[in-house]
Length: 168
Image (cartoon, rainbow, N blue to C red; front, side, top):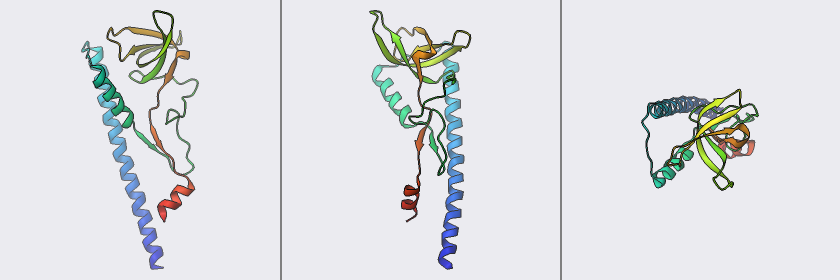
């Protein structure tokens, strides 16, 4: 009976700790959103920043490693754009989101680039994007078919085996 009480106490404390961690993650996500919003505002105000290629690659690596973490409960399905889960067909990327864009080069060849969404024209179903690695800072207008929205969350999946291993 004493052991059962200890287990019940440990479970309730773990649930309380989980709630606190989720609250902390929400604050982190709010801070990231504010930081990104300020960056976009500075960019629109004419503050064009030039980033060297090495610094850009480091920034991209850090951004990928620090994507917000989606932690599902057992049996809960992850949302779109979480890990390898694609966006819904009617999903519209928001301003500032990173996308993979298929662009045609001057010689007619096609290449994938990493781009940032600047605007979306619903009437024409076209995105206006900036290549983040382009020195000319050329704006591109691309159809939705040439855009793949990149994940917004990393994911952690728990299954029954994982949970049983964690409990023992």
